[in-house]
Image (cartoon, rainbow, N blue to C red; front, side, top):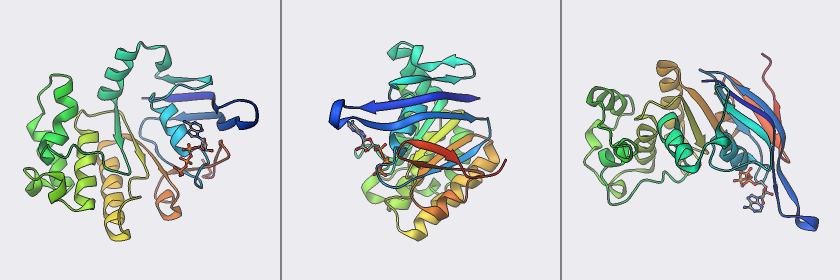
Length: 224
Ligand SMILES: Nc1ncnc2c1ncn2[C@@H]1O[C@H](COP(=O)(O)OP(=O)(O)OP(=O)(O)O)[C@@H](O)[C@H]1O
Protein backbone atom coordinates (compact mmCIF):
# COMPACT_ATOMS: atom_id res chain seq x y z
CA UNK A 1 0.00 0.00 0.00
CA UNK A 2 1.29 3.44 -0.90
CA UNK A 3 0.54 6.37 1.35
CA UNK A 4 0.92 9.96 0.20
CA UNK A 5 0.59 13.00 2.41
CA UNK A 6 0.61 16.38 0.70
CA UNK A 7 0.99 19.62 2.64
CA UNK A 8 -0.65 17.98 5.63
CA UNK A 9 -1.20 20.52 8.43
CA UNK A 10 -2.89 20.57 11.79
CA UNK A 11 -3.51 23.85 13.57
CA UNK A 12 -4.89 24.07 17.10
CA UNK A 13 -6.48 27.17 18.57
CA UNK A 14 -6.51 30.64 17.10
CA UNK A 15 -5.08 34.08 17.72
CA UNK A 16 -2.41 34.14 20.42
CA UNK A 17 -2.96 30.50 21.33
CA UNK A 18 -2.62 29.28 17.71
CA UNK A 19 -0.30 26.27 17.46
CA UNK A 20 0.78 24.73 14.19
CA UNK A 21 1.30 21.17 15.45
CA UNK A 22 1.96 19.72 11.98
CA UNK A 23 3.24 22.10 9.33
CA UNK A 24 2.76 21.26 5.62
CA UNK A 25 4.14 17.74 5.77
CA UNK A 26 4.87 16.04 2.45
CA UNK A 27 5.56 12.33 2.82
CA UNK A 28 5.41 9.28 0.58
CA UNK A 29 5.44 5.90 2.29
CA UNK A 30 6.02 2.85 0.12
CA UNK A 31 4.87 -0.69 0.90
CA UNK A 32 7.62 -2.36 2.91
CA UNK A 33 9.09 0.89 4.27
CA UNK A 34 10.35 0.91 7.85
CA UNK A 35 10.20 4.54 8.98
CA UNK A 36 11.10 6.24 12.22
CA UNK A 37 10.01 9.74 13.17
CA UNK A 38 12.00 11.29 15.98
CA UNK A 39 11.44 14.59 17.71
CA UNK A 40 11.40 16.20 21.14
CA UNK A 41 8.31 16.49 23.31
CA UNK A 42 5.69 18.72 21.72
CA UNK A 43 7.26 18.59 18.25
CA UNK A 44 4.12 17.11 16.65
CA UNK A 45 4.92 13.38 16.54
CA UNK A 46 1.63 12.09 17.93
CA UNK A 47 -0.41 14.60 15.95
CA UNK A 48 1.32 13.52 12.72
CA UNK A 49 0.78 9.85 13.52
CA UNK A 50 -2.91 10.50 14.15
CA UNK A 51 -3.23 12.33 10.84
CA UNK A 52 -1.36 9.64 8.88
CA UNK A 53 -3.49 6.86 10.35
CA UNK A 54 -6.86 8.56 9.91
CA UNK A 55 -7.45 8.93 13.67
CA UNK A 56 -7.66 12.69 13.31
CA UNK A 57 -8.47 15.06 10.43
CA UNK A 58 -6.02 17.68 9.18
CA UNK A 59 -6.78 21.39 9.04
CA UNK A 60 -5.54 21.35 5.44
CA UNK A 61 -3.71 19.09 3.04
CA UNK A 62 -4.47 15.63 1.71
CA UNK A 63 -3.75 12.02 2.53
CA UNK A 64 -4.26 9.09 0.20
CA UNK A 65 -3.90 5.33 0.64
CA UNK A 66 -3.33 3.79 -2.81
CA UNK A 67 -4.82 6.92 -4.33
CA UNK A 68 -7.92 6.93 -2.11
CA UNK A 69 -8.62 9.98 0.01
CA UNK A 70 -9.30 8.37 3.39
CA UNK A 71 -10.64 11.56 4.95
CA UNK A 72 -13.37 11.40 2.29
CA UNK A 73 -14.66 8.14 3.83
CA UNK A 74 -17.76 8.18 6.02
CA UNK A 75 -16.93 7.64 9.72
CA UNK A 76 -18.05 4.02 9.79
CA UNK A 77 -16.17 3.23 6.57
CA UNK A 78 -13.04 4.86 7.97
CA UNK A 79 -13.28 2.86 11.23
CA UNK A 80 -13.60 -0.39 9.29
CA UNK A 81 -10.71 0.63 7.02
CA UNK A 82 -8.54 1.33 10.06
CA UNK A 83 -9.44 -1.96 11.74
CA UNK A 84 -8.74 -4.02 8.64
CA UNK A 85 -5.78 -2.27 7.03
CA UNK A 86 -3.95 -0.46 9.83
CA UNK A 87 -2.40 -1.84 13.03
CA UNK A 88 -1.67 0.34 16.07
CA UNK A 89 0.79 -0.11 18.90
CA UNK A 90 0.65 2.33 21.80
CA UNK A 91 3.07 3.32 24.53
CA UNK A 92 0.55 2.27 27.21
CA UNK A 93 -0.20 -1.12 25.54
CA UNK A 94 -3.98 -0.41 25.81
CA UNK A 95 -4.95 -4.02 26.54
CA UNK A 96 -8.39 -4.69 28.00
CA UNK A 97 -7.74 -5.78 31.60
CA UNK A 98 -10.61 -8.28 31.86
CA UNK A 99 -9.67 -10.19 28.71
CA UNK A 100 -6.95 -12.82 28.42
CA UNK A 101 -3.94 -12.27 26.18
CA UNK A 102 -5.53 -14.37 23.43
CA UNK A 103 -8.87 -12.57 23.70
CA UNK A 104 -7.08 -9.22 23.46
CA UNK A 105 -5.17 -10.38 20.39
CA UNK A 106 -8.23 -11.53 18.46
CA UNK A 107 -10.49 -8.63 19.51
CA UNK A 108 -10.03 -6.64 16.25
CA UNK A 109 -11.26 -9.67 14.28
CA UNK A 110 -14.26 -10.26 16.53
CA UNK A 111 -15.35 -6.66 15.95
CA UNK A 112 -15.59 -7.56 12.26
CA UNK A 113 -17.28 -10.90 13.07
CA UNK A 114 -14.29 -12.82 11.76
CA UNK A 115 -12.57 -15.83 13.23
CA UNK A 116 -8.80 -15.88 13.68
CA UNK A 117 -6.62 -17.93 11.35
CA UNK A 118 -5.27 -20.32 14.01
CA UNK A 119 -2.08 -21.08 12.07
CA UNK A 120 -1.27 -17.37 11.75
CA UNK A 121 -2.12 -16.78 15.42
CA UNK A 122 0.26 -19.59 16.37
CA UNK A 123 3.02 -18.23 14.15
CA UNK A 124 2.64 -14.71 15.54
CA UNK A 125 2.55 -15.72 19.18
CA UNK A 126 5.56 -18.00 18.70
CA UNK A 127 7.53 -15.25 16.97
CA UNK A 128 6.67 -12.95 19.85
CA UNK A 129 7.46 -15.54 22.52
CA UNK A 130 4.02 -15.37 24.16
CA UNK A 131 2.45 -18.71 23.18
CA UNK A 132 2.70 -19.94 26.79
CA UNK A 133 0.97 -16.81 28.07
CA UNK A 134 -2.25 -16.76 26.07
CA UNK A 135 -4.61 -17.59 28.93
CA UNK A 136 -3.11 -14.94 31.23
CA UNK A 137 -4.72 -11.62 32.03
CA UNK A 138 -2.68 -8.48 31.25
CA UNK A 139 -1.85 -7.82 34.93
CA UNK A 140 -0.26 -11.28 35.11
CA UNK A 141 2.22 -10.32 32.38
CA UNK A 142 5.37 -8.19 32.44
CA UNK A 143 5.37 -4.88 30.57
CA UNK A 144 7.41 -6.38 27.73
CA UNK A 145 5.01 -9.34 27.47
CA UNK A 146 2.01 -6.99 27.46
CA UNK A 147 3.54 -5.02 24.62
CA UNK A 148 4.20 -8.24 22.70
CA UNK A 149 0.51 -9.15 23.12
CA UNK A 150 -0.33 -5.68 21.81
CA UNK A 151 1.94 -6.25 18.81
CA UNK A 152 0.15 -9.54 18.04
CA UNK A 153 -3.17 -7.67 18.28
CA UNK A 154 -1.87 -5.03 15.86
CA UNK A 155 -0.94 -7.75 13.35
CA UNK A 156 -3.76 -10.27 13.69
CA UNK A 157 -5.95 -8.75 10.96
CA UNK A 158 -2.93 -8.80 8.62
CA UNK A 159 -2.93 -5.03 8.11
CA UNK A 160 -0.84 -3.38 5.40
CA UNK A 161 0.74 -0.89 7.76
CA UNK A 162 1.54 -0.72 11.46
CA UNK A 163 1.91 2.58 13.36
CA UNK A 164 3.72 2.45 16.69
CA UNK A 165 3.61 5.42 19.07
CA UNK A 166 6.63 5.23 21.42
CA UNK A 167 6.30 1.42 21.63
CA UNK A 168 9.14 1.12 24.14
CA UNK A 169 8.34 4.29 26.11
CA UNK A 170 6.99 2.33 29.10
CA UNK A 171 9.63 -0.39 29.11
CA UNK A 172 13.09 -0.69 30.62
CA UNK A 173 15.90 -0.71 28.10
CA UNK A 174 16.25 -4.53 28.03
CA UNK A 175 12.59 -5.30 27.31
CA UNK A 176 12.42 -2.24 25.05
CA UNK A 177 15.33 -3.65 23.05
CA UNK A 178 13.62 -7.05 22.80
CA UNK A 179 10.37 -5.49 21.62
CA UNK A 180 12.23 -3.50 18.95
CA UNK A 181 14.17 -6.58 17.77
CA UNK A 182 10.88 -8.47 17.43
CA UNK A 183 9.22 -5.62 15.55
CA UNK A 184 12.15 -5.47 13.16
CA UNK A 185 12.13 -9.25 12.72
CA UNK A 186 8.40 -9.25 11.98
CA UNK A 187 8.88 -6.37 9.55
CA UNK A 188 11.55 -8.46 7.74
CA UNK A 189 9.40 -11.57 7.59
CA UNK A 190 6.07 -10.02 6.67
CA UNK A 191 7.10 -7.04 4.57
CA UNK A 192 4.49 -4.83 6.24
CA UNK A 193 5.00 -1.11 6.38
CA UNK A 194 6.15 0.00 9.81
CA UNK A 195 6.10 3.59 11.10
CA UNK A 196 7.50 4.21 14.57
CA UNK A 197 7.58 7.46 16.47
CA UNK A 198 10.12 7.84 19.21
CA UNK A 199 12.30 10.32 21.03
CA UNK A 200 15.03 7.69 21.38
CA UNK A 201 17.85 8.01 18.88
CA UNK A 202 18.87 4.34 19.17
CA UNK A 203 15.39 3.22 18.19
CA UNK A 204 15.17 5.77 15.39
CA UNK A 205 18.38 4.38 13.92
CA UNK A 206 16.96 0.87 13.60
CA UNK A 207 14.64 2.11 10.83
CA UNK A 208 15.48 2.11 7.15
CA UNK A 209 14.23 5.65 6.63
CA UNK A 210 14.70 8.14 9.42
CA UNK A 211 12.84 11.40 9.82
CA UNK A 212 12.97 14.16 12.38
CA UNK A 213 10.17 16.52 13.26
CA UNK A 214 10.75 19.93 14.83
CA UNK A 215 7.91 22.39 15.45
CA UNK A 216 5.72 20.36 13.13
CA UNK A 217 8.17 20.43 10.22
CA UNK A 218 9.22 16.99 9.00
CA UNK A 219 12.53 16.24 7.28
CA UNK A 220 14.15 13.03 6.17
CA UNK A 221 17.65 12.41 7.47
CA UNK A 222 18.44 9.22 5.56
CA UNK A 223 19.90 9.50 2.08
CA UNK A 224 17.86 7.50 -0.41
N1 LIG B 1 -5.87 18.81 21.29
C1 LIG B 1 -4.96 19.77 21.30
N2 LIG B 1 -5.29 21.07 21.49
C2 LIG B 1 -4.37 22.04 21.48
N3 LIG B 1 -3.04 21.85 21.27
C3 LIG B 1 -2.64 20.58 21.07
C4 LIG B 1 -3.56 19.47 21.09
N4 LIG B 1 -2.86 18.33 20.86
C5 LIG B 1 -1.57 18.70 20.72
N5 LIG B 1 -1.44 20.04 20.85
C6 LIG B 1 -0.16 20.82 20.73
O1 LIG B 1 0.43 20.50 19.49
C7 LIG B 1 1.85 20.38 19.62
C8 LIG B 1 2.30 18.98 19.18
O2 LIG B 1 1.82 17.99 20.09
P1 LIG B 1 2.10 16.44 19.96
O3 LIG B 1 1.35 15.74 21.02
O4 LIG B 1 1.83 16.03 18.55
O5 LIG B 1 3.67 16.37 20.23
P2 LIG B 1 4.59 15.09 20.50
O6 LIG B 1 5.83 15.33 19.70
O7 LIG B 1 3.84 13.85 20.23
O8 LIG B 1 4.90 15.24 22.04
P3 LIG B 1 5.22 14.11 23.16
O9 LIG B 1 6.53 13.48 22.76
O10 LIG B 1 5.33 14.92 24.41
O11 LIG B 1 4.07 13.16 23.15
C9 LIG B 1 2.16 20.69 21.07
O12 LIG B 1 2.53 22.05 21.17
C10 LIG B 1 0.84 20.43 21.79
O13 LIG B 1 0.73 21.22 22.94
